Image 1 (cartoon, helix red, strand yellow):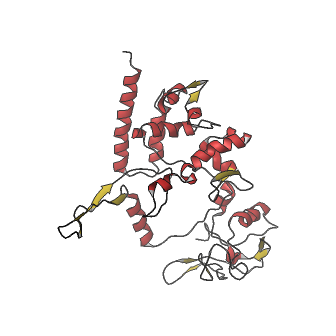
Image 2: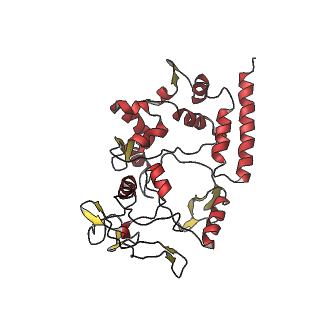
Image 3: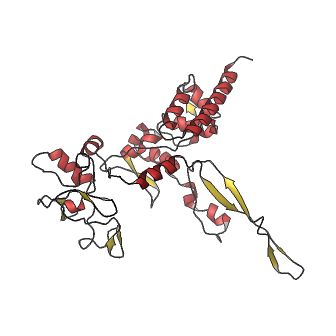
Length: 326
């Protein structure tokens, strides 16, 4: 375990880059007595179970969980004016930390429950939701009657949400839809950032996190002051229609301020995202289908891959039909 996972502050004099990486990305806190109002504090205790104990040798507890080596060697880092030692270090892998210069927590898993969880998660299939529909009626005595049999419908859905709206059961739907935040999302805020910052126009949507930080409280993109982040867009199957072609364009289009800009190319505004993809040469070959299969191969089950392959063949056949002369 000690060959792969570390939970100590390195020697600053031996490797300054290594030391600075741990200092910037892998130190928890301060919390506890030093900072009782830290976000991790719940009921006056750290919810992440810091600070840890000093131990000279890595071991396992009675439940099989690892206890990483944290020696009391006097090495500290300063964070928010507080000197913190190895008891505040989040376990990490040295190679990954120095390669990606980001917070990457690495843990040792040696329990059968870990394998059971992964196997169950990979093979669990599509998500499911229970939707409730009911209509109350009244009997001859004007008493309310609820048909419990028709009250529930068991539904299955396959979707990736791009924007969600939270509301209470008794909220008026008109008031919910009229909220200013309903039309504000990370995606639409991208349009605003392209209007406000010139260097934002150089980035496609997928690369926004590399130079900007999303502020949830004010729902705006702000220039990143330090650190680095990797962007990710929700996976969309090729058979999803226009939303799939929109996702393709978000990997290449830079600086749009509205949806029409995304569908524009060389001064022409195309009626659909699919037409815009064809105009840019994104659909002239099988590259988009190959990319979709390669992406899904990293996480999809064998059954889902077969379904995706069928969808790809169907979509490719439609594309060929559209290109044939009348």
